Amino acid sequence: MTVTFLGTGTSQGVPVIGCHCPVCMAISTENKRLRCSIWVQSKNTSIVIDTGPDFRYQMLRAKVDKLDAIIFTHGHKDHIAGLDDVRAYNYHQNKPMDIWATQETQAALRREFAYVFENASYPGIPQLQLHEIGSQIFRIGDLEILPVLVKHYKMEVLGFRIGAFSYITDANFIAPEERDKMRGSNTIVLNALRTEAHISHFTLAEAIEVAKDIAAPNTYFTHISHQLGLHETVSSALPSGMCLAYDGLTLHFPD
Image (spheres, one colour):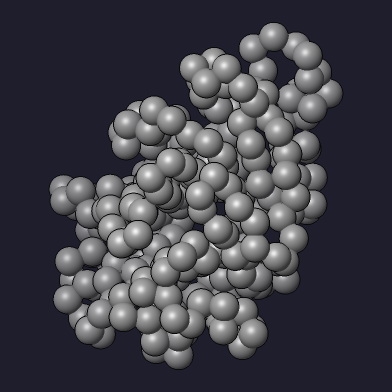
């Protein structure tokens, strides 16, 4: 299995429009972050978690020619706004795209993309097949996926464990029983927005403490804002086994 970070930025991305801070002005590619998404590939299965506003460009940049399903963490715009561009996969694969989401996230999709659900037979609109995520393991192709429930302030958001890999974004609280689902992972991913406190996201220090508690050999931080600082500066100060993720980073997991 491989996991590719398609985007590691927060809702505004990095650089931020109109900002001239050192991070937004940095030349290095590690400091340029599209909205959060990952691509998971196994021998026979290709899935993406979240389709933010950069989805089309992310698919082109990563050369994602085959896509079996999309999984959504939650219904915020920076995680769903690019869904319309599944039309290309509908055309090339000649079938609806399988969409996995909670009831609440499905309701958000129906609001944001009302034309898809109100005019389901209209030519040229996305063709979607909705599947509900509950609390149990579900399968897409040869991937087993375990939902991990986290809190994004008062909003319930899903993370996912896929084999030895656990992925959490948009969280500021993970209950002990949900952390237990992640224990034993080889690699975990956590959001780390900035150093200052935030109402709905872990700070870097908070994310580090969660990572220490789960004690996976490898931790990567994502959903990063320009306020966190330069990639190279922050990375050099992280504890052993912890790294900032960056767009295009690919992780490899044995069968």
